[in-house]
Length: 222
Image: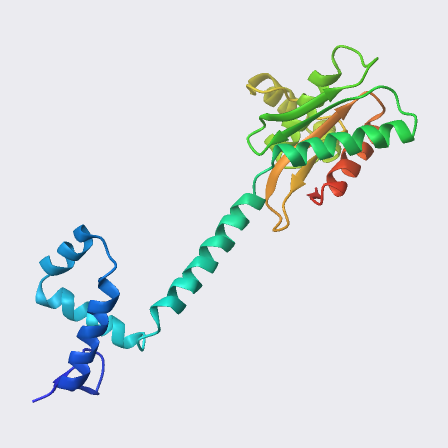
């Protein structure tokens, strides 16, 4: 009497079972010795479950399944890569920001690009920029990352909640300067991957050059 597959009303004929076992054998052949030994060690119920699962997949060709899996993995890796700020992107932001500052005749700038953990990826201080420009730019960038907003927004919040922001600045282990001049760097999916801060001009000028750098690098800001 033909046995019935779990969850199915279609009987599994002897010819079908024999064909499916040959299919499993062909697929399993390229596996490592250890993997084949593990399959042999399986109980009857486990082997039957594997067989049933193969039937439910309607015996999709192995090469097709492998190709689909490869595409998914590659897409996932590309997505993960896009969620991290690279050194090349950081340098591109700095180069364009400096060019923007020079084209408008702004004072010498200090510019810092940090990642999503507020760690410096790249920084630059122009000739003639005062000693604290990099420290201030870093404090702005870290504040943007730490609070999840541009420092233009934080400047207004600090005015409304001076005691709170004073406490944050005192408690934070990183520099924290909530003054206009830093914006978040976002990936295509909207995730925050870093921040860029500048110091040297007015707050508006500092913000203008870092935004120009981020846009030129093909990234979004916020």
